Length: 352
Image 1 (cartoon, rainbow, N blue to C red):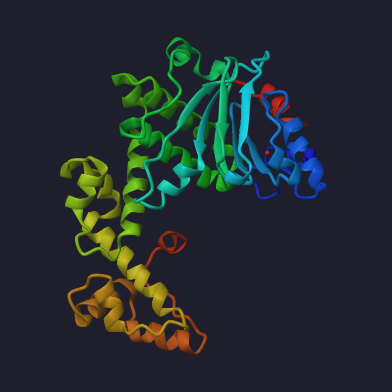
Image 2 (image 1 turned 90 degrees about the horizontal axis):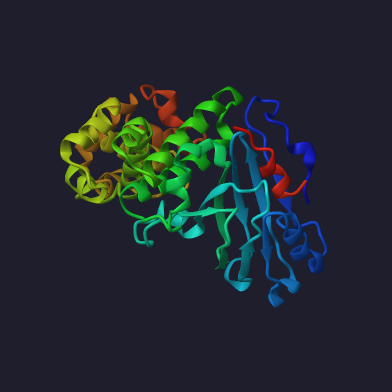
């Protein structure tokens, strides 16, 4: 069900509030039609025989004033959908679509590369999908009016490589941070989105330069995710990261300069992983085995590095956890420890 009372710009904490549409509380036989009606002003969806057996759908909408970001969760492959754009004025918005495969690819390097799709709601389009989740950015035409000629000729699918891959990573990161963005930072978030779309979909030297900071931040986030996924890989280091990211060593080092270097960052993340496991009273893994798994030369080297970074010994953390008194690291900065009415009506009122 859609609750318009959730649509305030900010919640009591000063963070962005969301609009939410959910079919779970509706009778099974009405769920698909409710979803179809909610989107009827934007797209026309084909009736699926399977949908008569129920269509659990949940959508969150962040209304940022100048654009809208939505996340949707659907039944997936068991209920495939077909749709086409209605092309009604004034909904000539552009939209960026990031299907679930892109979200998985951000977490698993074995999943096919992420891919963004670009569409215009004002132009004919027929599509089909069976994803379980999809994220979409709706952009009013006036926000990117200077690029209209270029964007109107865009083929629709964005390459998963190069700038296209960075745009996908940026959208994933943007979604992750949305629930924590305070209202006063919304203009900056919109400007970041505008700059990244301009640089990645209509690249020129000037547009790429304008988005340089956002591109660098997105590349750093990708690098950090790779490191997190491969903490137990003995060959994890600058060479491997350069190959996977397509960066030179000098550019990689510039990215990690605020974090005191690549090697230091990798070691810190390994020590944090060790601290997390040692703090688990149910973990039976020996300290020596934890050190070996996280690629330290030996237990003694691991213990020295751990004490230097955390201010306490691995054995002290384990002993405290065993009696229910987790020992907090003494030298780690706090920031390292704490690591959305119808859809058409909402989009219609996006302002530039």
